[in-house]
Image 1: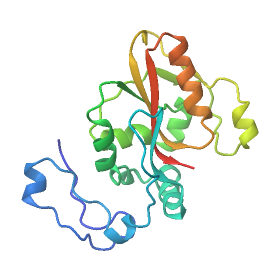
Image 2: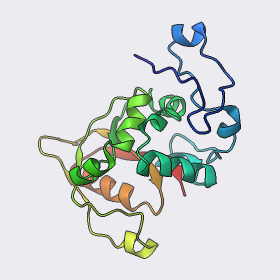
Image 3: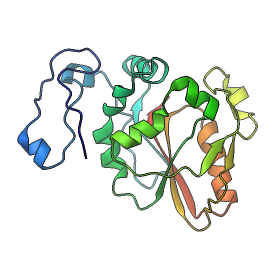
Length: 203
């Protein structure tokens, strides 16, 4: 897999504490992309068992808020590399089919790239799109009550058959669970054997 060698921290542009070594290249490890100072500002969500229906990596603190803004809304696609090691570690050995939460085509044009797809691409995690987004509405500006009462925002894509298959839904952030739960319902109603979820962040 081709690697883009980062010379400076992608977040603060300071020097990286760990240079790329021959060991990293020969063992196909992911080189560091942010410095230790920036890395320490991210707060892990805490211990979670693999049997849980939702696994999240980090809390939504100020460092993560800034990261997410730059990545999603300032269109800094290079930041997809920041958490590739952690994502690869959690998902690379899973047997279930990975499904990223999809963007509506109009939203994709606006954002210029699919942020969840890029997180998985950089982590070298294969995935399939079983779902299509029905609305361009964002959940971000809604109240908790509005999110929980939102109509179905997904549909199953044509020629995709979830029957008796295991799935892991992947999204960037989990807030009220509306997005994940609606996607999960579509798959289970269509005959999926099991559906769990994985997110980078949980609020």
